[in-house]
Image 1 (cartoon, helix red, strand yellow):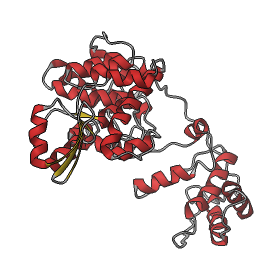
Image 2 (image 1 turned 180 degrees about the vertical axis):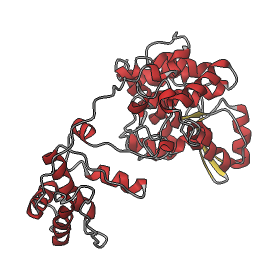
Image 3 (image 1 turned 60 degrees about the vertical axis):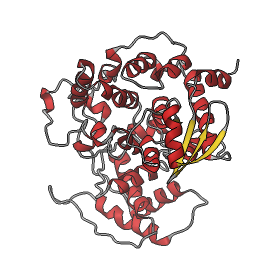
Image 4 (image 1 turned 45 degrees about the vertical axis):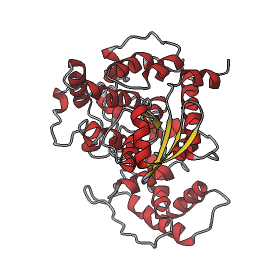
Length: 388
């Protein structure tokens, strides 16, 4: 039996639903396609099992419903492919899964569901899925509708819930403090060298921009050796939009860092520019492992997952005071070991996560009020830095 056919057998028997304002398309368990107005859709959904759909809150709003049980493919996607971007629509998920988005929206849903379960089966031996069955069972105990299908895909239909599956901090690698590195040397970067590095980063087939090369040469002056302690060189450089300023200052900065075995901090006003710079650095370090070793993204503490806050939230879920919170916490537990930078505000935790579970589901896990207790926290050195 192929993985795709097996995945189809594991899927819950449920209708597939796509809603627009005042209208809905329903694909029944028997393959019947129905076009319904909002009133007829609401009546039909009262009789059918929980539908399979994409983005529960948006779907219910379009049909004028307050709440109802659903099987949201976004939740399944976040479990199977944590930290992977996807637009919260049927076509968005299809594109993220390399499925041809040629079928109608509702026709894509069963293909998306089968693909996700097949991917889980194919990757059941990967390290990230070592504790996936226990976690899915724990989420199932909290009412997660996808739990049984996920357990079947993982080949562990009888897995038992395990409270430790939510305690992701126990599985994160530990970070050890090291002695401070020696002070960098102060070898200069010549303007011509900055131009050469820029040309190397751009490649031979890039558009020639004399203004960008001039900008890089001018920025190199900031890296001249200091004549007096505490008196760094300052360069105020301005260039028009589209000149290529980012690569213009990365070129001399990267040369200085390599030559002097030092660190260059690039401060940005917005996270958008920060992400742009991080993306541009792929030209300098195309290998992902090398880039992760050489380039570090740092943001305000309020952006990052706080493991102590996560521990408190997991404690509340396992104690029974907030049992349903185990579902979003389970998806956070899937995301934390693979996130690129641990940013729960604007990083690789999907923006639609808070739309599905509410702003507090993720925002409450960050240090938003300055309550960090630093070295008094059990996660401060061992694992906190691995997330941030």
